[in-house]
Every structure is written in C-alpha cells, then in structure tokens.
Image 1 (tube, rainbow, N blue to C red):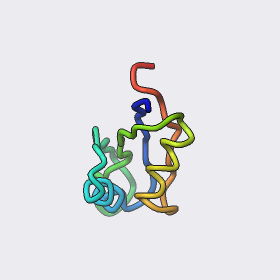
Image 2 (spheres, one colour):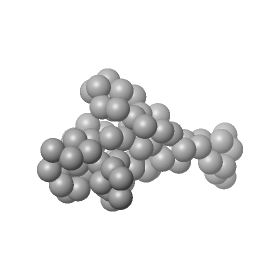
Image 3 (cartoon, one colour):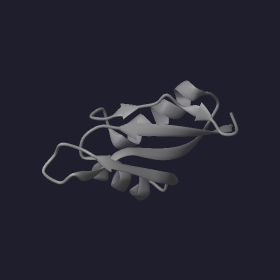
Length: 80
C-alpha cells in the first residue's frame, strides 16, 4: 500500500471534512477561498490522505467515505 493525497471538491465541504474525520481518515488540509456565496470565505478543497495500491483505489476509498455529491481526485502519490 502506498500513501496518496486525494483532493475533494464540491459544495458543503464541511460535510466531507466531517465524514473523513469521523472515519479516522487523515485530513491534511482545508483550502479556503473567496466565493460569490453569501459567506465570501468558504472551504474550496479538502485534501485527504489514503493508503491504497493505486490512485484509482485511493479515490474509491475516499469517495466511499464522502459520498457521490463531491468531486474526488485526481489522487497523487505522496512524494510525486
């Protein structure tokens, strides 16, 4: 198994962040940016770390946790 960084994007990323934390999956960072939404500062990306055999498996693992409402990937091998 190899470590991968897997970005998660979409709306209501607080839910993705909370799901990853509840599952015990390391969340490396949360990127915050300005948006046109009523609250101008919002989470734009959650970066998770997943141990998997390949990038596809890492993305599938994270998608299983956060659900299909989010864009998951592309996963990048740690160190690349």
